[in-house]
Length: 182
Image (cartoon, rainbow, N blue to C red; front, side, top):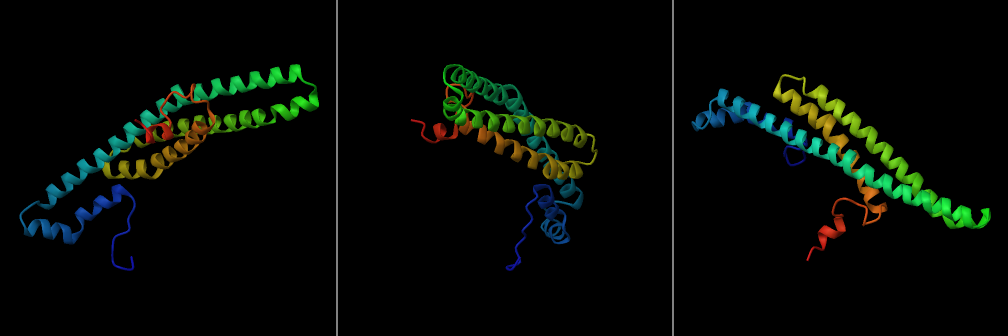
């Protein structure tokens, strides 16, 4: 704001600039758009924004529930099997030391998968609620303020799982693999 620049970070609210007095006057004076045309264009922009976030949220939810969580659970089961076998072979003191890292990984995977599951359910419910809103501007604002932050949280925990789960089990290309594609 020091230099008089707009610092708005909400995309739906950024579109309001098209409807400011100065914008309406400028577009009107140049004969480019009437106020009604500007409002109609904003309605379309808000709808497009909502649709894009809606599609991204649906894809993220599908990937999380149908691909990421099963892969994480499969890897967690392999670790559990390893811990069980370690404890059946070695004495308790030694098996506790050997299996300690696996047990910690099992707990961390469980924490991240539970969070992903809960956040995904919350995101779906919030989408259902937001889709009942009839004005495009308000719906876009709700999507920006509620759905996008949930998507970011889900992504954070999926990124943590990606670092833990074995490459052979992980169903998607990992970031490091995409960075160094030949």
